[in-house]
Picture 1 (cartoon, helix red, strand yellow):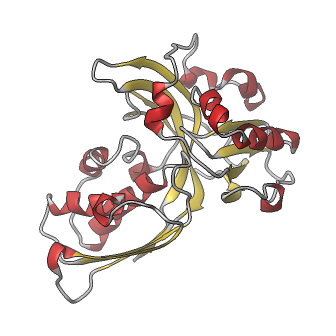
Picture 2 (cartoon, rainbow, N blue to C red; picture 1 turned 180 degrees about the vertical axis):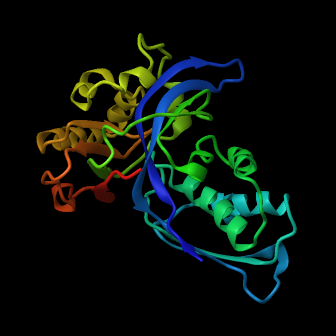
Length: 279
């Protein structure tokens, strides 16, 4: 079975508090986009030690096999049910360390694909629980609908974003990344006057002045191309542009039918994608 784990964007990201254990409370909105990896999952006839035949190509993810989130998802399912040997082949398209959730999406699609392929009949709420053990944003990809996220990014509430459904989005990814832990350690908490949940009900044309990503200023200080890419998106007609997550990807929302930037407009990017929002 071949599936296409897709990326997400963060529209707004406010760091609103820090817990005694050091974890940060945030509010953000996750939106699915069509920028996708390619994942093939099969059940080969041979049984092998560990129950896994693994292959990965495309963009490099520099972690040991057992640290890959696809493999962590398989191990989590093996703790739930007896599985045959599973073969997984991942072609990586979504850049790593870009704030696009590619690894979390890959893991979630392993869960849902094996649940279907092997007729495991694990209910969706249970799949979300398993996904939450892999990563805070991983459960989002079980349903992949616009979501207002609070807590450490793991408490979800549906959000009506029909006003941007059908708009075009352009994503450009500069070279370099800043670790999420480093970014958190250099950003003070601030509680916004209005919740992001309410602000995103305002017209998109007002978001430029009211919707922000608290990570952005620090990441720009380390990766100036983030600011350059964002300004270029505005210069080329974006209604709203912002860095996604803890970076380094930058996206712009454009009216449906408008002329869009192309990859040639961002010659220094390590990743680029454009397409419609559809949810």
